[in-house]
Length: 463
Ligand code: PMP
Image (cartoon, rainbow, N blue to C red; front, side, top):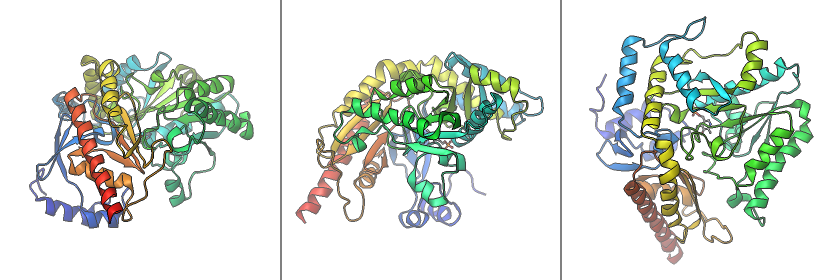
């Protein structure tokens, strides 16, 4: 056994290649390239095992909302672990941490949601909504209402149900998904799929695909529509302003549940507590995770509207669903301390009143870069569409077999910035504690990476 990190980077990489199978990774390619070893972090900055500093434009995986190195969370977890490291919340039991965290969550939840079901991840949260929504209709003597409608290029997790609700073609192709009972409609991705229509018209048209799907499947067979207020992993797809009002209208008029996957958008990311607040959505269920503990301890949950809770609580009898670690004491302690930081430091308000505008301006400064077709932000989410012609929204051809996005991502790392690539869409989701100076730094490093990309294409053109 070794202590924290007494090994050299090469030793860690070799051991990692031999024993550690990574998520969402081409294992052979990783072994050839070698892993990047991140050894510590503070605020918005990561430090590699070799001492290089990287500005974390992704808050880990969209989760470290309060930034790294928050002693308050570490202390709260240690205290809880000493007092009660584990107990379950089955069989008539609870513990103070679960109760206190559930109550605190209800204080920041939309007014019509006063209960939470605890899970350990976003995927488990979406498995939970899948089962809970079906039970809801069973309770109302409508057992035919089983079909879920999701969207292509949505991400709802990597469990069998999460991946099925999501609309990632590559994930479906690899393991024969989706499971039966899930239908996908188009996404409101104007830059990629808007064609000749203007964004407003396109947003309405994509929303109306929900109406058409309900008609085709039959309202009596539809259980719920599930969507991220802003698609994250799909490429920070900020829907046209016309999209959500039209979806909300359809959900009001039709007898189906509306499920918001707030795993990324929740806990202040869009400048309100919930992406649903930002788009005036009134969901029946909300999946949460990530910013719930800022990633310090794994945790997820489902926020349940009183409408659903009343029905299921009174008619279903036992809900045969739960996880050994539902409401884990240490995770609840981390979540409570995290929530206290978000509230006391007014981080959500800070995003809304200050950082969202500041980032929007810094990001807009990149829009006229010759490699950029569109620069968009909402709250502290942002995307850059790489394109060779911004007006025509033409994509760049791969260079030496490597896509422009992947190349740009590597150039970002060379320039000390973690920015993620989804195809040729570069995306950011920095911690909510980021300063103005760090936002300037983020934009400056992104510009350097874009300049490097332009050079690479120019060199190839001249060759
Ligand atoms: N839903 C959304 C919107 C997500 O972004 C993610 C993770 N990126 C998930 C669900 C799945 O969460 P987890 O990885 O914690 O299972």
